[in-house]
Amino acid sequence: MPIVALSTETTDWVSRFADEVIEESERRAPGKPVVVASGLSPSGPIHLGNLREVMTPHLVADEIRRRGYEVRHLISWDDYDRYRKVPAGVAGVDASWSEHIGKPLTSVPAPAGSSYPNWAEHFKAAMIESLGELGVEFDGISQTAQYTSGVYREQILHAMRHRGEIDAVLAQYRTKPKAQGKKPQQKAVDEAEIEAVEGSGAASEDDGSSGAAGYFPYKPYCGNCEKDLTTVTSYDDNTTELTYACTACGFSETVRLNEFNRGKLVWKVDWPMRWAYEGVIFEPSGVDHSSPGSSFQVGGQIVGIFGGKQPIGPMYAFVGISGMAKMSSSRGGVPTPADALKIMEPQLLRWLYARRRPNQSFKIAFDQEIQRLYDEWDKLDAKVADGSALPADVAAHSRAVRTAAGELPRTPRPMPYRTLASVADITAGHEDQALRILSELDPDKPLGSLDEVRPRYGRAEAWINTHVPADQRTIVREEPDVELLKSLDEASQRSIRLLLDGLADHWSLDGLTHLVYGVPKVQAGFPADATPKELPPEIKTAQRSFFALLYHLLVGRDTGPRLPTLLLAVGQERVRALLGE
Ligand SMILES: [Zn+2]
Image (cartoon, rainbow, N blue to C red; front, side, top):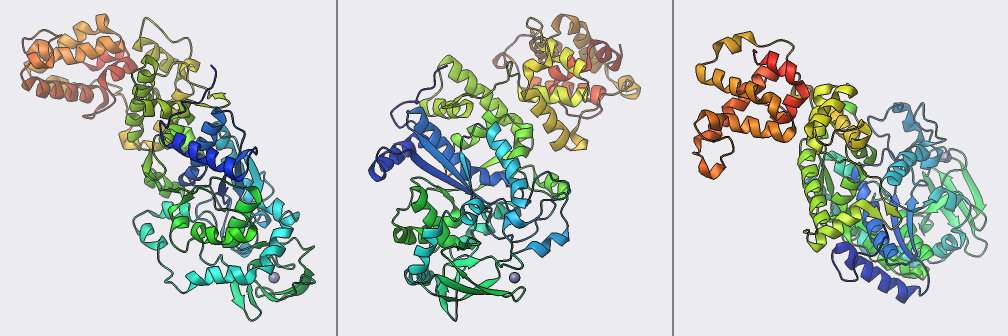
């Protein structure tokens, strides 16, 4: 299928940003590829909330590519940032890692058992894998590689020459109360979300500091202990001779900055330097970066020193997670994009980002809500197929299922997620049984193999196994509940008789749906296919008690998976036995 731009009109937020970014790029850098950027700090597992930092420019870049332009989406790996703290709950890491605090993330050992050479590489790898699965095309730039190979040498010397100007900009904010902007917004969010926004160099210490020798926007990593607890004690603009002392180990040395590659510009200077260096036209940022005195705003005042301009930078709102709290506290970790991709297909995750404007917050569901979300997605998919979807919904759908490079792999037969989850729940890993049940759902089109419902089936199975608490799992009774069967009144006995008599002729998802809703109607003297309008309201009550009775007899609880699915899953013979035949 040929990939074309959705339309030249502004159908959704992505199109509108694409219009603006193309126009701005043509003004600033005519004939050059459009540059958009994201920054990620591999300081630990990269939180699912941080995915918005990548998805927002990705969607815009993808729309621009669909229109035939060349785009570079830079992902700046802030792996030359200092190691700030030992994150809790990471396998293979203990308190001894605290001895590395202050070193660049690429100089910290990877968690025990990792195949990666250092801390940053270990956590980058997981993110890169998820981005690949999501169809995100990007140019990764390691800031360690950039700084330690001297790529930014001229920019560093330039910043040192203009340290007075930089200091003057930063000074405007130093006098203001520290808490403004950032803190009030954080009060409302949970711990995990705070973790997410603090990902990329947001700490307030990151504007450099003034010692006796004045202000310097540059910090060397110590030549002895590798930590950044250094103070520049003198600098000569002409010779570029710089002397620093380390407060951690007492080491001191004099280097020539025009040939020295073991240090970096402080965050609030580093970011605008890179906007100018790369010619970034679009780079969104989280709310913490966008408040007064924050790095995005200050960067806008500093970027001119480097001869560049501030990118178009919308603020994006928090992405929350529902249903992960219980799980994360037991596992100690934070949810990552890989965790989400274990339980949902990339299309669904892309859709969540595409359908909401960046300033709208939303939640990614790890709880029961995921089933409703999938129902909504399937409904949209059907509407798009029959041409009845609204333009903005068509746009979000298109951004979810394909990129400029092509379609993302799809599940050939996307059966409802909740059905797949129920089947996985009931069959507990018995694939032959799952295949039999799924084939009986629609006997006219039986399933040849489970591969037809994969990868969706695998995601639903993973969700059941990892996110549904044990007390909500379905366990089919081994033996009939003789006591309950004996205690049934005549009406209940008759309803079960009606069900048993109809089983053989209704053994499909549609057939059984008709049957279980029909039994209480027939019992009350109405035809099985009577519509709700033709029925008294009491029928609803009768249906509810009939369903509760069936759940008790089949699974020993008063609720469970949808009854038609449950009946198919249990199998006709066992249903008959459990219902006392
Ligand atoms: Zn040192």
